[in-house]
Amino acid sequence: MVKHYDLIALGGGSGGIAAAKRAAQHGARCAVIEADKLGGTCVNRGCVPKKILWHAAEFAHALRLAPAYGFDIRAGAVDWAMLRTKRNAYLKRLNQIYRSSLSDFNIDIVAGHGRFVDAHTLEAGGRRYSADHIVIATGGRPRVPDLPGAGHGITSDDFFELPDRPERVVIVGSGYIAVETACLLNALGSEVTIMMRRLEFLNGFDAIIRRSLMEEMQHSGINILSSLEVRSITREEDGSLALETSREHRVTGVDCLLWAVGRIPNTDNIALGAAGVATDEAGHIAIDDYHDTNVRGIHAIGDVTGQIQLTPVAIAAGRRLADRLFGNQLHSRLDLENVPTVIFSHPPAASIGVSEEAARSQHGDAVKVYARHFTPLLHAMTGEKSRTAIKLVTLGFEEKIIGCHIVGLHADEMLQGFAVAIKMGACKKDFDNTIAIHPTSAEELVLL
Image (tube, rainbow, N blue to C red; front, side, top):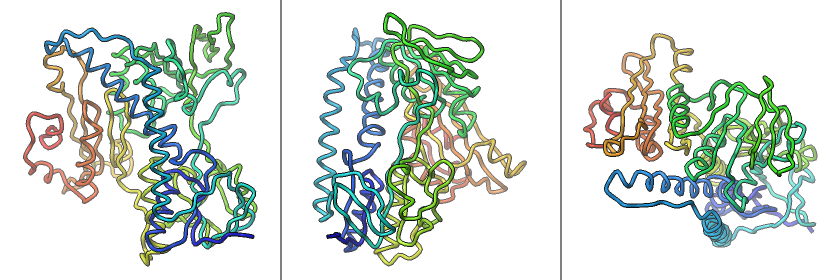
């Protein structure tokens, strides 16, 4: 017997859960199919455990600076095992909270790997389930390159299971996962090398972020090897890894190799062909502006679509989709213009809108840029050389702000408020007319 629902979310991550809960609020009968822990990548192997380690790294920085403020502190090494145990306990509580919240909304949880039988039917755990609307929210997974010995490395999924902090780490990649992991491990005492094919990391971000952050990371002791490709990996007699790279460069004595070379959408194992759902060459599900696929009644949200891969984006997409399908909000859809994002590096970097390079390419001389570098007040006492960099990208006679980019202390918290203003169409004069909060780093954005 096939059990029928108004909506089934295929995937119990942030996006799928958000879609099901919002649909249930509108009176729809919903189910979530998930084979793994509820919460998806963000809760279990991404944002949340990463931010916990980021906070630990922040404490390491603070302890190092404390003597400059008169504290007699001798900081020891981080207790990695204790930190890991407490973090996992917190994640377990989050899993239970997700389960309870779905139950509160009378949403059924189907434990099992879901696959399409046809356009309206899924199979999971040996049973079949049908729905008028199926939302594919299966997310993605880390990619491992096809290289000799690549299996000696780990991915970001595996990283959170490490029983001990590795002493000497090589991270291959140039995206935010590579940068964030390098910074937190460096702060916690590991010797870290980033290796990348590109000349600079964080492709697509404004140059002030790429270059300022690279300078900060190198100053903190992170070794950055640019324009270099790994060719093979071997295990040495002492158990360490050796990496053969392009330009006959060899890296030896590596305790941990982390692949951070992109992610693959989880579309290759859900039998999309049985439903006739189209994908692009990379396996991402093709959708329109309303998150509809080419098959009526089948929708897709989150990383599986290849759109901006951020948890809040997936949540917003799921909620707007459910509002349209069940809330009589016929034009509800996700607006992907001016989406703020943060790189949880040390120091953090925050960005919204377009880069200066992209703006000039599109608008030429109509673009005007305001930028500044300065040392935060914190470091007046420490003697540290860590600096903050800010940039506003404006357009036209009114100087509408189309980009805001920050690297430095508290950049992550700063941007959220400015993002609201920019989303509302703020111009440079609006920032100029705002009284500064002194002394803060954020005030520099209204004093440019």
